[in-house]
Length: 419
Figure 1 (cartoon, rainbow, N blue to C red):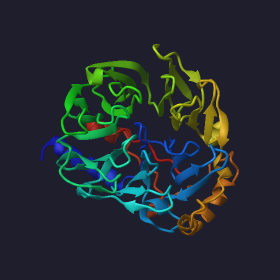
Figure 2 (cartoon, rainbow, N blue to C red):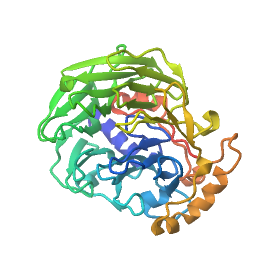
Figure 3 (cartoon, rainbow, N blue to C red):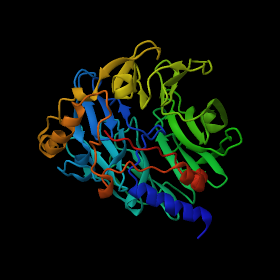
């Protein structure tokens, strides 16, 4: 077994067993935020105890518990966790889980089914539904021999063979453009490999582009976003510890420029309706790049878990640290200069009102309601899982030593914080 194959085997095991979360947009963290295109007043937030939903623009919130999402269980404890959520063009929700599965809900989170097919060969390490075609989605699996990219033509329910693309290194991310809808990108990471792949025919053929080093360090690349108006522009995260960088690829990858480098890590990114770029950090810094401009010095903000904006609006949403920032979800109407509370977790009104969730999540809600209504000034005990000895509550992570050992083949995984 080669060193590269051995590392891939380690990675496959880590993804199958880890309880570390990784939100799409390249950032493993507590939350992600989504704005379903087919429901202008609906906001979804992926949290480490389930998925929260508002159907009135953030005025009121309910949730579906993580045990129901991952295993169809009414258990008050989550044995399997969600790594991250994504939302399709028709509002269908896909969830990647720590046991390597991909689960899907086509009814707003009320019921969930397992995606099947060729993706059963290995843990699903990334996935992305088309932002325009509700029938098309792609998923990445990782095995000891490498990574494979699979396509679904029924909205993520099944992923038949053959693979769209296979590599003997790690496929770290994949996304599909909004326009043109046949354009997609993927990133590769491996020994001496940091590469962007581009396809203009829905994955039938690919063109590779090597990515630049970050202060001399070969980065671990991930796609932050494809520009929603121009499929030839891609925003990339190039993680090369101790540095983190944002790069902009234009011409479909023919030109790649690093736009911002920091010593530390980014934890959130958004491309605004007016083409402004926002990049946040977990230590409460917000970097802003105006259209046709450059990133300015950071401004003080919240401790970012996510950033997002519904295209066509000016409201910039952020997930924050409830105990230090005073809210869980906030909104800025002045381009990030200030954020106001939208919701704090204790304001959750319970499980979604549909019967399956009301029944399945009753015990889970009884457990976390006590925690969420506790003194918000003190971080509460774990509400999403049990004791570390049981394997349900371990805030496991891949530490710096493991990251160094796996080098560019690993994804940057930070601790999955529990409520």
